[in-house]
Amino acid sequence: MTVKTVGEKGYELSTDLLVWCATWTINASIYPQEWLNEVGELNIKQTFQVVEREDVFAIGDVCGLAETKQAITLPAKMKLIRNNIIKVAEAMMQNKFTLGSPLKGLKNYRVTDKVTMYLPVGRVSDSHDRFQTTID
Image (cartoon, rainbow, N blue to C red; front, side, top):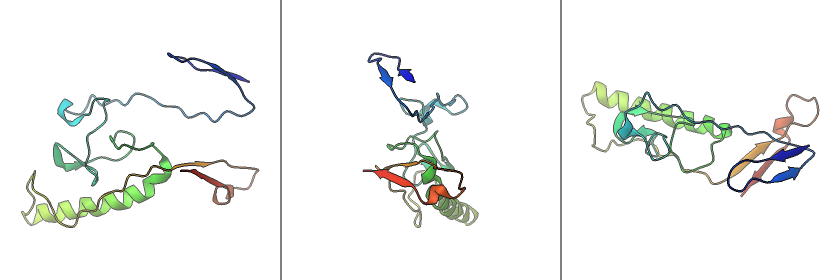
């Protein structure tokens, strides 16, 4: 198989295996422009709060985190965002939440610089638990 890239540095590469990782443009048209960074992702804090609106949380590819987007990081992010949403909701119910004021008890996500790839081998359904490669 020959793969040809497009763009400024288009080149051809002969390969026996292609791991296709598709990307797309985020449809951020539903968000106010001031919430977005220069590439159209939401500006978020390490708490997953939108910078311009701390009572709004975001998770997934729409977030402007400086890391490689990987589904494998979602469970840890979901646990953290759950904690933070509960803390903000509790503060709101007690009238202790004010936009722009720091709130105690929120957890910060630590951006990872590791890339993980799972490559299933064979027909065993749990092969992803046995074959994991992390590139530092």
